[in-house]
Length: 336
Image (cartoon, rainbow, N blue to C red):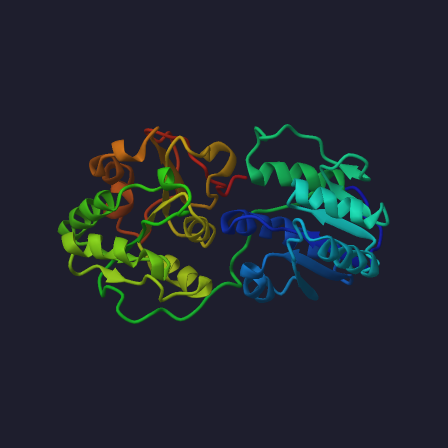
């Protein structure tokens, strides 16, 4: 293993979407293990402050000011970054914005990232042909961190909400980014699937934000006993629900990544709008089914993919393996 010099002050940068942040927790955990006595600061979005605090990985959390076109905000951020006296920066964002942060620091710290001129540069094309997990492992290997496992979400747990089905249940995640409707399987598809699951003795719970409550209503029209959890769970509680579920079916969205990393048997639904080979969820029991258009995905095809998980006498079914119709496996099984 490559030696990593002793560091007193370390900065980690990770912004991005929820799924990206969750996948980056594995690298963050590896960084903490290699710098156990360092003061580690995380620069992130406000939305992830509580999640980062719960992880216990950081001594300090800075909220990214997103300075954009505000010169005073850029000057203030530059002063803060330089005043942090960081000896090494792990740029897990590797974006144009974080490249500007490298320039603001003026080369005052070792830097693991993509930006030209940094000390531990990982050069890769954009978009990268590698999955985020493999890409960040390659990046950190250049900086001397050779053991970067999949994100461990054991720290993320909470109370189960009231109203969950008393019987074995499937967790449905019908939402996704409002700005990318092509990432959503129509709610009518989830509703049909919920009715079919109910007929097979499997209840349903629907997770999402309060703004996605309408989707839960459409599902309940076909499966009246489905539990509506929209707007009722934080990330820790959602992790608990996913672990309690027999299986999870969700669109390409952060909560689906969370369920997969929490260890739940998870089927993620992808359209051509995103590439599961690069951004698909990872977990010990994770599968992907993909269609060019999710409007063309039939409930029967989804049911066929999860049949063994439903029929298995062991909750959650067997570890995912083998080819999957319509899309590749996007898992990080025990052999890895």
